Image 1 (cartoon, helix red, strand yellow):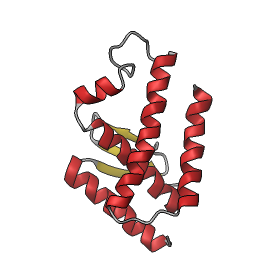
Image 2: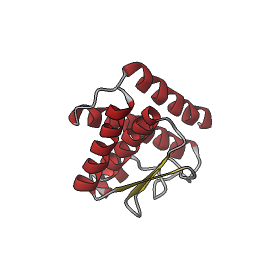
Image 3: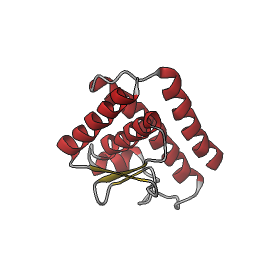
Image 4: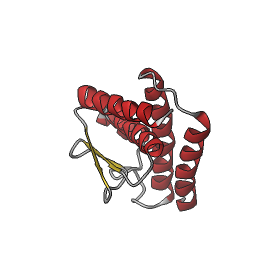
Length: 140
């Protein structure tokens, strides 16, 4: 994908998030790459190159899709997140649920790209995905 195709891709993902989930996307040099479910907002650090921004946005959109399928379903899927369960935030079970959601968010982001007709360059997508997941594996 060239820079213009990537910008179009970013716009498609932003529009999808707004229309289907009422989630806004904010870019900035001091922003974290994150989905803030409590305020229905994704923030993207725009110090990244455009390809990385698109990958990151798709990944964060994956979190939106996972979490917006319903709170009860999310809680059943990830019982050791910030709420309930027998573990405390930061223990192994919690960390494992965080890792599971991270992996699933990359998968959902890839599915969304296909749904929107975005042709990801597999080599770069896998590289970005694996580098991001490695940070969570190291944290485990």
